[in-house]
Length: 390
Image 1 (cartoon, one colour):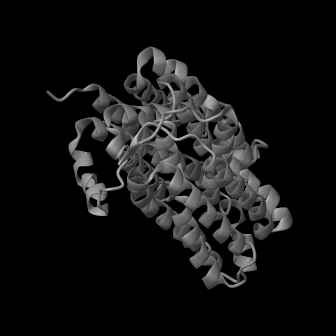
Image 2 (cartoon, helix red, strand yellow):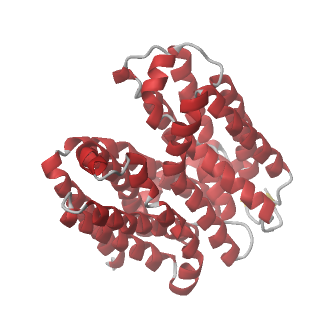
């Protein structure tokens, strides 16, 4: 074992990490608006183009459970640097691959390599500097992760459609490489690296995470957050998209209107400093539930009001995420923090994978009921977090 000296990452490094987070998580969303283009490029039937998303998503979620705990043992920087170099390599390869089989296999490897960054970067920033600096670091990273869901699709629809998917990947390769170099000179921080621990010792605590009532109050709402986010927009596109377009509003504009809400995590540091991570996360869940309830009540009757209510929903989600992550840092020891954050991100994206199923299950006449059910779920988790088990 050895002890590192705790320092806060420089502003330049933090900016690099935020941009890299946006570039990494965007890999999940870039193909969404260009699935027909990918099908044509790789001669895939349209019904099979979803494999490009599923291959990445499954490997991505699985990797979270591996690399967070691994960073507890060998160090955050080692995992992030190695992962980003691997991600740059496979992404460069995908820019030139020509067959569907190699492309889908490469997407799976890309998702696995991408999983080295989000949970480990969050754990890294939650351990560096003063408590205030840690909250700000997590807030900026949360903003990047959430914004990727919107900006990744815009990037795909603008850059990939015009120049091709391969050319769209090349700027991302540069970002991964530059960030890896920046991390090589990054400050070490004050946590003990468990060099003498076996891998079994590192991964064994995963079975006890759900036994912690504090963590259960984090993981349950995490499961519902991206599930609600994805289901909301899929339900909006599939069942209200034509009605929205009749009002002269494109489907991308339905997301663009909520862009200011994606900056809500930047309000979290002051809120957490004043009221604490637990209360901020619970308030965010309540706001998200309120926004969905308003969407359910408005429905297709008044589209501008519906989109205004969606901003309330997204703001609630955006406030909840840094609150939940900061709470993990507060209730776990450094020895298992990487594992706890990894399990959080795993649960988060398992919820995201269930979102399309929920959105597709609803009908036009039932989309209001979908929003109502999602609102009830988020509201119930907010109440569950308040109720204390004695």
